[in-house]
Image 1 (cartoon, rainbow, N blue to C red):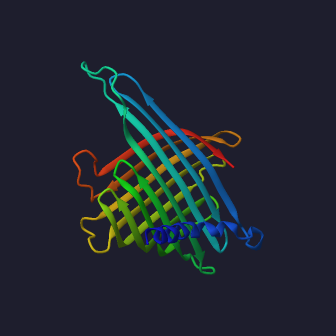
Image 2: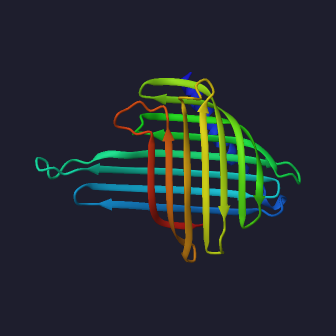
Length: 256
């Protein structure tokens, strides 16, 4: 049964990406935005810390169909020297892989759209071995131009989660908003925010994700970026793992 669930969830997570395979020539005004961003942080002194991040994005915007996708990963270790242990062994303090995909179908000349959202998550620090979710949504483009996009959506997800405490499945509400501003041909600003809540326990089992940043081209396909990620999980009951997890990073991004 676990194998069947895994296969089904894998297929559902991959489904939104199928929109990328359609013939772009059959749809007018197709625009691709694809980039790979890499960031790293290293600190040595009163504390020792190393953090590496990777974010692969592939967004397709068209007259009738849009596809949004991303694959984010982070890994980090931290150590604190003391007089008794001046060279401590570093402990893992970051370890996450998150894949998201969303397929959107626009209703004619209307700014409304309907689609399918899917996500797969692994977080070793929060003991989330796997969390997969998939479900329909409906949304509206308040702004939909080549240089600026602003949308909001609401959907329902089926969630399968496997943690150190066991397995569970539940229904989930999800509200999300996205903003993209191509300030110039060489610089852009983006903001993505979402809120999720367990349908059976919205007051306690909820969370959010905020990602915002700016990119500026420095040479042909290379850009510098600075990004803030804030992940909130209200269900965590641990004196070590905090409800709010904020990461500020900078690095290089490659457009392809």
